[in-house]
Amino acid sequence: MDKKKVMVAIDESECRHYALQWALENLGDAISKSDLIIFTARPTEFIYVQASMFGAAPPDLLMSIQENQKKAALALLGRAKEICAKHGVVAETMTEMGDPKNVICEAAEKHKIQLLIVGSHSRGPIQRAFLGSVSNYCVHNAKCPVLVVRKPVE
Image 1: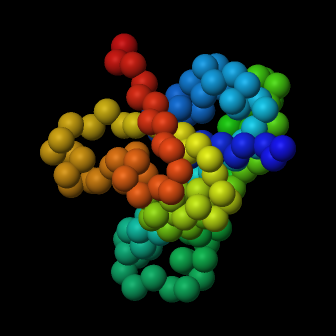
Image 2 (image 1 turned 90 degrees about the horizontal axis):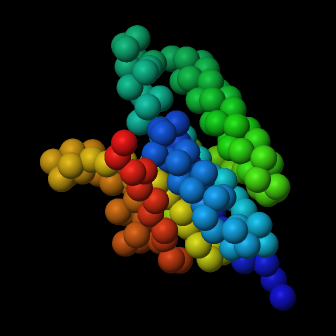
């Protein structure tokens, strides 16, 4: 029998790290007996905002920003892998460049994920309207079940 595939999408926010921690502590065998993929997106708009501070962005500046963004993503995934190891879980890591909402759903479909776990920022309705909600988008567009983990307010 094939192992189930679970993907946890993370970013630098505390909420997204909480989703990974929560999954490891509360889903037990569903995580430890599955192929676990930890995924992070590298938003492209961030590159162009940074580059626009310098006017017309030369290609090597864009490449440098992309490279730094990739290093940061790999460091984030490395920390997530360490968290998994402390729970006795081996995880695969992945990163893709693009709009987080889209690349998370695309990766889940491409890798035949059976459960997608995402964290939720506790944004109000006005912030969600302007900034969008990755977790809401995933709930409505992913081709697999989506578990949204919200960090309790302290």
